[in-house]
Amino acid sequence: MLTAELINHNIPQLTLQDSIGKALQLIQDFRISHLPVVSEEKYLGLISEEDLSDAEDKKGTIEVLQDSFITASIFEKEHFLNAVNFCIKIDTNVVPIINTEMELTGVITVSDLLKTLGNFSGANEIGGIIVLEMERSEFIISEISRIVESNDATILHLNTTVHPENGLLTVTLHLNKKEIATIIATFERYEYTVTFSYGNETHTTNIESNYQHLMTYLDL
Image (cartoon, rainbow, N blue to C red; front, top):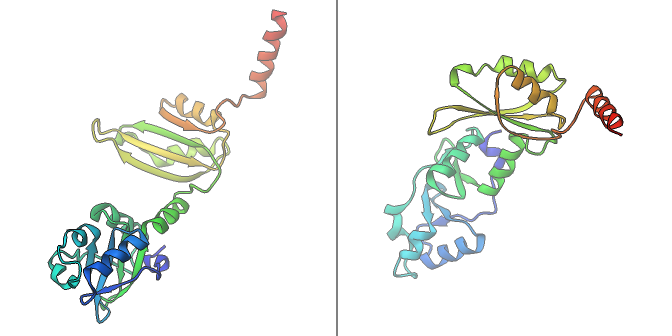
């Protein structure tokens, strides 16, 4: 999904002639950390609530704060994950989106990004989660997929992160079914380390269930 598809047109834009007090009030009304500033539709940058609050003369225009504008932005044809990365780097809950003419087409709010990220990661799908830990050299996606598919399941989403302390790779699998006990058992049989799981892990096979009933009967 491209950033242009997530633009929120309800967030106001500022001009250099707007007062600091007005800008600060808009930021508080919309509960956002920054607002975009434009001049003849050209994007000039983001102004932060912190910089506005620190200004002594609230009746002055925001032009006097132009040196503190955050000039970074995201193009409307970029993937939305770049907007997520922008929020993390800039520490803002709005992302300015521009076109090739450097005109501001709107902003994306962090709440819209979270919803999109949730759909992108399959968070709205019902299923189980298995987290594996391994050396990077041991990560073979075809083998992981084969193990899951051999248990009549499908990987809806796969995510990898590197542990900053030990350098081990954490692989998170979101599956299309909650009955994951047999899948976990298969991973362990192939000597994978399962560090976390969520689903119906207490599921037992008919043979195991019948065996438990027999043992209970013999104890009577």
